[in-house]
Length: 397
Figure 1: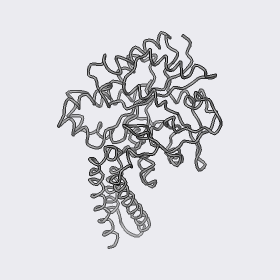
Figure 2: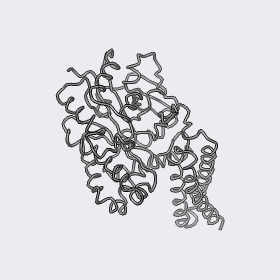
Figure 3: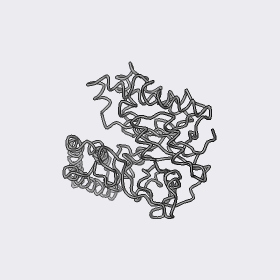
Figure 4: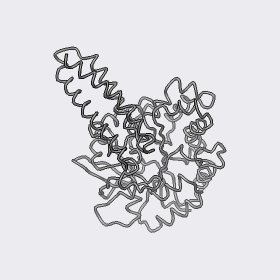
């Protein structure tokens, strides 16, 4: 069967701060289910090294946990985590994707904190895997055009966005909107956006088989006049579909392995592809705008970020985050102003600690789970506030 389309398959991996430790100490079965989800992409990439091509993104805070010596020891009877991470470093058919360090909702957090979240996330990837990612996955797919200059400055070449938010400048057929990369520009900076097919991605997350997927791709791209890039992306460790210990009943055994066998035998209309390779071979021809929004979760559409900012409690917590961020950046400016006149190293250490707590408070999970998790925002904000007060006192001496 002739290939008429390429497939960019992606997995998003994230755990909030200290969650791996909490799981192994309170629910070892669930901890085992989750930790093995990080190994399976690597295992199946090796099984199908000749044909498999896909993408895996890790949040910085997940990598922080996976490289923690205590976590490594606690999970050693289940998985050799350092060996796994080394495997990702050497897997040429897996493209690693960057995120914000603490997995923040960028359109909701202070813009002054974007750089640190981006640079720290990118730096953690470099420290762990020895290479920096070309592409960026916005946590919860929450994106706004104002992010483009910050992403470009941080070193990213492309970003994956939900296709429902992509608005091309020219009138295009649906297949040319969803299944082609586009150029986007904001404030003089430009980069490539890759639209994610929302419907196919929902199927990837909940359950599908290779025959259904092949037919759906044929139906969606059959009228296209040029090569298409079908992008599907989902969490890689959430839900029973990915956590199945019996791999034959889950994503990797039921769908992925038969898919790779059929692709190897050219019995499908689609061929796996890395996004960076596709962009180099098929440069974007069209320009677009991307409306502010996220992916659809639960009963929300993702159009208005209501999952993370829909309640008064959520909004109040973020107001606190913004206020503490202003105090932090003001303190940073003051230290820069006086550091030539006196030794401020101890003050800088305190400020650095406060900044880490501030960034941690921006973890999307603290907002996603509604009022029950909002206290976790304050668990980070309160010590940050106390540390910044200590900085203020030190500066006033």
